[in-house]
Length: 244
Picture 1 (cartoon, one colour):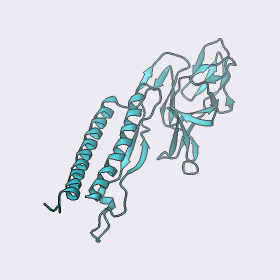
Picture 2 (cartoon, one colour; picture 1 turned 60 degrees about the vertical axis):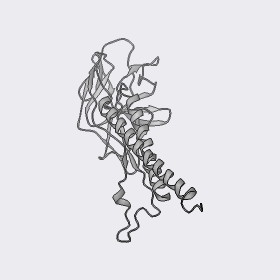
Picture 3 (tube, helix red, strand yellow; picture 1 turned 180 degrees about the horizontal axis):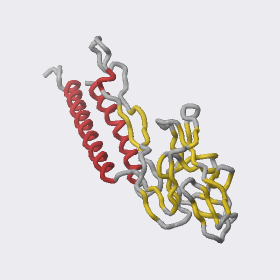
Picture 4 (spheres, one colour; picture 1 turned 90 degrees about the horizontal axis):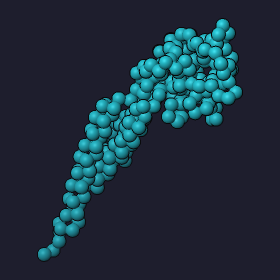
């Protein structure tokens, strides 16, 4: 019975963590460039002890790992010349307060110094450093990421990629950093830049709501099993063997 209570708790704990991931996905449905995450949970079969007939002995069932879904989000037309979308593989390279980070959020603007920046003020990196633009003049960004203002080239967006499968660490809502040396930085050659578009979040509200309902029902089932074990234990301790 004690083992049943332990297993019930171990089954409920990863479901709470899964709910946290789903809640974060739903909160970022409208976040540009957001990549949804999920949770791998270990199966019971993994914890059987061969032929000793002692399943789950001194084992803990829990989440295997948090994973990130890097599939492309929907393409949203904005018509803004400084909004940029990467069609294909790769990330924009940005200098943040915490160092170089990578993102699919191409919602850019120009600061008071004429530098191309993200919506949180981080500087966008080009192949040859920061990208400086004039406050006046039409900006054109071609399919390779080269930025033109008038007839003058202002640099090219630095699009980086990583060895797949990606082993990146989430840093904030839409930034990533590589887990080196497992995931070395490599130049991206499989991309196409589209000006005047943004990549929406790839978090599906319907799919995440279904997953949330499923997780809640599984949690409630584990909770009922835990309560049943607790009631049985209570009877065993307080009723069985009582001398009338």
